[in-house]
Image 1 (tube, helix red, strand yellow):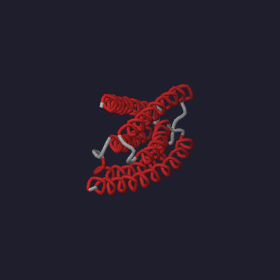
Image 2: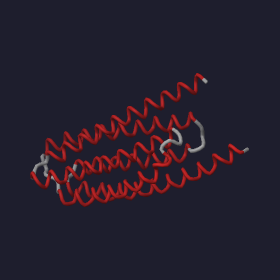
Image 3: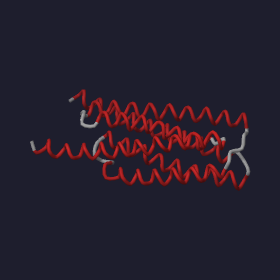
Image 4: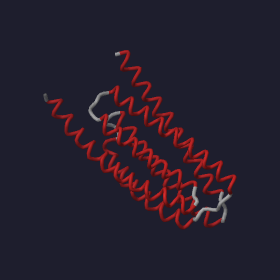
Length: 202
């Protein structure tokens, strides 16, 4: 009985933080995707795709709270798949940008990138205490960490675009963010498959 009472407050805290994180990412996705189109920025588009992926991921993470290791492993597999899918999508955008050679707007990129970095840094700080709760929260924390890294990269891309008047900083950062997605997807899927194997053997 004591274990049950100990677990429920943890689950309640996880739900509250995930709802707040989901809302923050949904708002930032809407802002970034519009800014990416207006600014013709691959880096911003990659970051907005990351935000949308996080919204999907966090919604499923809410669903599996308290449902056990198998469901958490399934959630992690979904998260890995979403990360890989968006990584592939960004790579296609990079190819498209190479063909069109449209210069992005560094000013819009820097303003929106700074806003996203501020929001995601706050999210990462809020998730810090839950990063080791379980596989579900660990994968959520990894998504948030990736967001902060991607936001910083967008700011570097904006600075590069403004200083060089070249499309290449935007393309290179978009490519790097795609690589981050795919690398994290591999890590999350590997951990999920390991958890599934342990659950079946047990």
